[in-house]
Length: 144
Image (tube, rainbow, N blue to C red; front, side):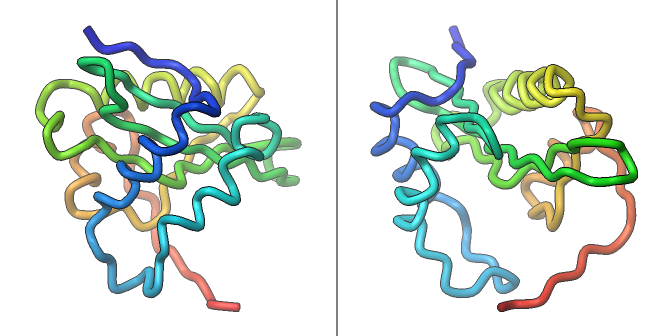
């Protein structure tokens, strides 16, 4: 049975190991998933973002991280899916849907009127579309 909950401090090692399963992305050069260790404590606080994990068979099978931006057009926050992954050995077992459902629930509880995904992967795109997301234009960025 899959358990969905917010990440805890003791989940750090499993979370980083799972993040390292992300496929290489030419649009994200030089990603070092070990950098997640610096952001992790702040995400656990839940102020600017949070981490939701799925546990299956006693281990972290998937996760979604959200960040929250404060914007005028909504008179407050909207949510952004930053990372979404289900571990290779757990794919196809229905873990993605409850993770995204919990992300929607968390965003709604903060008063968010929108949740976005920028630059969805080829693997993630069908999962997002099956779970209520719609394609909505182009994504731009500049490296600083």
